[in-house]
Image (cartoon, rainbow, N blue to C red; front, side, top):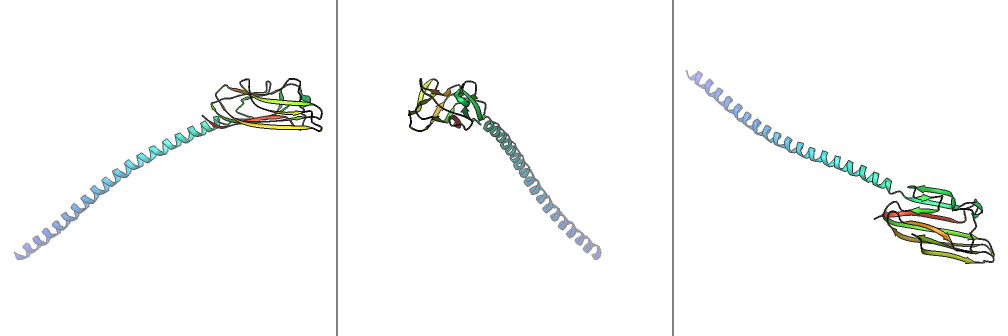
Length: 190
């Protein structure tokens, strides 16, 4: 029965080898399961980070859209009234009926204005913030036409108002060529 013993021994060796292979496969499966769990956790974290980034991007886009504040306007022909020729009014903070810009948010703003007069007339214009003169231009009875411009950076709070004002007994001229104008824009919010 030596032959049966050899068969049994060979069978035992095969079972042992298969058992070792199975044990190795189980270890590999366990490691793969651990790796898969780790990858799934990392994937969930990345998915969450992407969603957060998308939400922040949408929020910043909406915030940026709200920060678009800029205007430019010229006087009506013949110098009658306030400003009737509005070239642009992003954010709708400029009122063409009154010639007043009202800050829609706290921020740092840039304003500039140009004025033109004919020879022999006096011209003086000031830029006002909440009714207080900030800067001015003037031309006293030039021999030929007079031009002047000025600009300023102002810190404004929401609701602050800026405008230009003609001094008493002085004149400016404007027509379809827009020699006299007032413009401003938000540099950055505060």
